[in-house]
Length: 627
Ligand code: CA
Ligand code: CA
Ligand code: CA
Image (cartoon, rainbow, N blue to C red; front, side):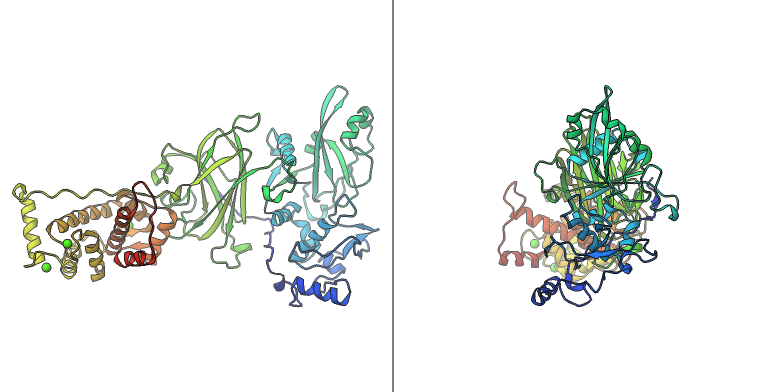
């Protein structure tokens, strides 16, 4: 069973798309730049001034920071957050994130833009660098507690580096006073380090796994084994030292044994990048597939497996794992589920929905799995928690085969759009099972010759005579009268009234002779159909409410021969269900008549074995007016 877990992590803020809405001057980036170019002055950002207030909101700085403008910097347009180019420095070095190359300032400026969005640099301290990177790159972050990391953790990190992923690591703090405390080994607690390399060296005849870590301050380094000037290096031959780029520079970057790393650090975060975020062609890449979908109340907002009656109505996505990982059994993939706001409301922080997903073995059939499947089958894997984060992601390794992934909100009836991204080593085939549409309509029965009629059929013919009158044809008005009279008598189904228009629709469906009325044979076929639809209604009205809930409807429609995709079901519920997502029998009948009408028209117009038709505007409108 999935369990509920509220996030304590600060919510990442969206990056605003429009610069004009950000700066208090009301000017866009372009306008601000133009102003600076015209006056020949460098931009000063009054919204985020070069003062201690922008660095900290609660603490007093321990050192006097000097805000400097880097001399290489040119205005560019890579972000719509307008910042000036003043960066906090101490002893002529950048204080916060900066690149190894002292002439490169993009990371520092990026951080400044992000800090501005969050109010101050200090506000970033609690968040993680990787989370910010995720916002900027559109990548997917994974978190590992090193103590619980998988056996092949070294290989996972190695692959991540090869793929150009961004790696961060940190040491937990027990309380706020420990934050940024220095350990005897020169490591800083509660501080965001980056992992920049992995390698192995020969050391007294043994292969030693090493990891290279970087302190973004550009100083303060690990002083244990394999640190910059530690004695271990003397036993490594010069060539290997060269390959590892080992130099004793106090640049914040250092090597340590992977085993020591696992002892001293607590957390590793990986930001996996999508191939489009990588520029280097030589890097190994993740294969990424993306699915957009939505949870809509009454049709596809099924909630998690705790809600068996509705869980199965969620979107279902089939994953086919067809190729093994290099040198491994099974196939590794990341599944990242992100919620998007359906109605573009500001829905951040407390209003984020609680989301997650579950993965099931796929049975042989290629169709939307029904309620009974989930009653009898347990999930093989699932997101670690259901959580109110913008994105929930997880790493899995499963044997080759077909799986069904079901993204959902925790509670049913909660609406949002979502985006599901699958990152895999080898190409994974994914398919939205809800796109499958299958219409299976019975052939109309052959008429019985009058001399072979049973007693029942003869009685029915008499009934028809009474309804049809002298012309022996049932008009829409006559049908309206008889259907309302018959259906109102039924106690087990709720029924309002069938309108004349609905009866015209029925005639349009059944009138094969094209005279706008029903002859005996047409009426008889309709009557059988009506009885069949009533039986289905009674059968699938599981709670015997006399009405069809939108979820009951889905199974009833399937039994009637209509397997519809999530989007069509959403439309049907919008059109036919009432506010409490219920359909009375007349709504249900209307829905079926219209569906069957549309399906039969389509079938008659489509060329054999083709699943599309070609219509001009005239044909299209006359068709819709007729259905
Ligand atoms: Ca008549
Ligand atoms: Ca007719
Ligand atoms: Ca019901």
